[in-house]
Figure 1 (spheres, rainbow, N blue to C red):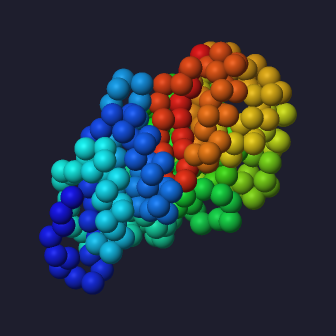
Figure 2 (cartoon, rainbow, N blue to C red):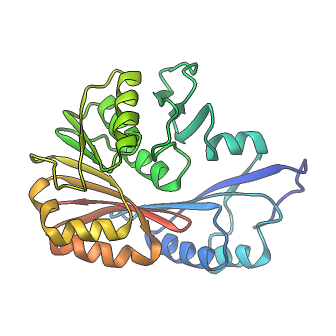
Amino acid sequence: MTLAPVLGPRSWWTATMPCTPAQAEAVAAELTALAFHGFATSSGDDGRASIELWHDRQSLTAAVQAVFARHRLTRPTLVQRSEAAVMADLLPGGHCRLAPGLWLDQEGDLIETPRRMVLRLPPSHAWGDGRHPTTRMLSAMILRDPPAGPTLDLGCGTGLLGVLAARLGAGPVTFSDIDPLAMTATKAACRANGVTGRVLRSDLLARVPGTYAVIIANLYADLVLELAASRRLARALPTGRLLVSGVSAGRWTEVDAALRALGFRRTARRRSGFWTAGEWRR
């Protein structure tokens, strides 16, 4: 991988490389071991995968380049971008890109177009401002394959993911979180986006009635394992899709095994640095 001279002191390079799921898995593990986190991987059971990079010239060390060479990923298409353009994708603020074609607007002045969906998110202290990789990965998965039917945003935080599902046609949508700040933030997000949803305060599924066709859960591994062990997850989702994010790479195998034991089969996986997300169906 050879880079041309950087044009300015704060220019960045981005690249997207098609690969196999096995290559994506191996490269992600090796980059993480090198403490290089400017990447995201995406893979599905269809045999296709990709690796996305964003980095400056200094961070692309010989050791990092050697990882790609070992896996025969040596000719990515490199695009030079300004720091401002990259930060617009990676950091929250008035406007923040969640996924290609999907933007978050905290100021209420970004115009929606046929090529740009805009989610309005009033500022709050609840989890889910679009900054974290786990939120971004689930946003991309929802956008790529929109949920259909009764949908639960479990551990909803600001309600961003459930609002996105509702905007794409899912419904009815239920939002659930144990944090009272999340209740307030989610109701505000629903109003700002013209979404109607049921907002419940519950510790995981303890006080969430009914069954769903889709459950969206941006939770960490211990909570997913708690759900699986209690069997509440299997009752709430007898058939349908489970979208999970927030699982650290080191806990992925454990979580996957627990869900498979409940009859789920994994259909997709994404990774961004330390974090993983996936889809399971039953």
